[in-house]
Amino acid sequence: MPKYNRVFVIVVDSLGVGQMHDSGNFGDVGVNTLGHISESVDTFEIPNLQKIGIANLCPLKQVEPVERPLGYYTKMNERSLGKDTMTGHWEIMGLEITKPFNTFSDHGFPPELIKELKERTGHKVIGNKSASGTEILEELAEEEIATGHMIVYTSADSVLQICGNEETFDLQELYRCCEIARDITMKDEWKVGRVIARPYVGKKRGEFKRTSNRHDYALKPSGKTALDALKENGFDVISIGKIKDIFDGEGITKALKSKSSVHGMEQTIETAKEDFHGLCFVNLVDFDALWGHRRDPQGYAQEIERFDKNLGILMDTMREDDLLIITADHGNDPTYTGTDHTREKVPFLAYSKSMKGFGELPETDTFAAVGATVADNFGVKMPEGTIGTSLLEKLG
Image 1 (cartoon, rainbow, N blue to C red):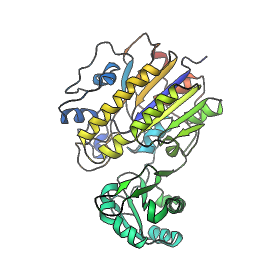
Image 2 (cartoon, rainbow, N blue to C red):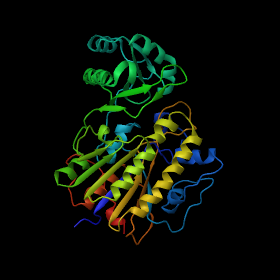
Image 3 (spheres, helix red, strand yellow):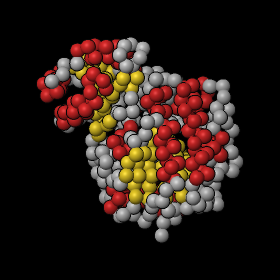
Image 4 (tube, rainbow, N blue to C red):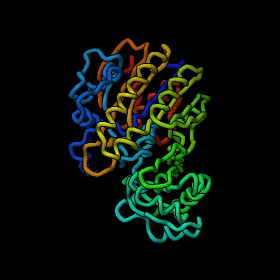
């Protein structure tokens, strides 16, 4: 019988807790997303996260560690070679990525790729450089609206992103062009982790705003994950946020799309009120997309505070035989140079109303401890070729 009837895994996207031993190899020296956010703001009200031990992971200016946390805590190191969304999430569920995904942040996409994209979509391409989503709209959206050209850009992540105005470019046309781009970028030399449709509204500079109709066209995972193992053994696997996109639907039995991180937590709370047997896997993207990449520690801190309030509601809503695991997929230190993710350790915070013990666990050498713990809980064997050791026995 499972130790817990339901497991909630929440990925607070990009909430790193300090550099890894190899962070310097990725150009990330002295990074600490959570710690530097705390240093950058005067107030930081996160009582629920404090109770379950987040301030025990790294020093926080305003938040004291607790002697008797409500559950267990540790830090997890990433074994895969990367610091992007897909690598982090795939490793959480058991996959080790030994070859980083292609990035095109230095010079944009090759002329041959752009030429094929133009010919197959029927749209001239503008942009083709690394930029933030808001900056590229301010620069080129008026031209896209006037001409029907297609804004293509990338970032430090392994992504090809296409913008389209919902009123003039048409949402379905944007999706069609992204499907073509996904097909083109399946070539090994052009292979990116995700093609992302970035719809927006507005008519002139200063008014442009991205909408929640974003859609990610991800590569399929390189192998079976804990999600597949759960689904194949008859357990529910409910995804909230962009989890379905990150795993290209593999191993998912039900998917809920979120409009924001606050909405994602509201969906998680509502899901906790329902009957299901298995895993609820949540990604809360705003921490990364709205605040990390934009280097806004104040906005990031306020997002954590909003999360903390809903976390308290979720903890109250949880049943005695529920397990909550809070983690992250990489760092994105908003005080660091550039706009890229940062290579960091991530939190492992475990809580259940039925827990009798508490305290610090040894650091893990992989994020995959999460997937292995979930699979172990439900008595499911992890797929062949996966990594990770379960922490279930330690969660007493």
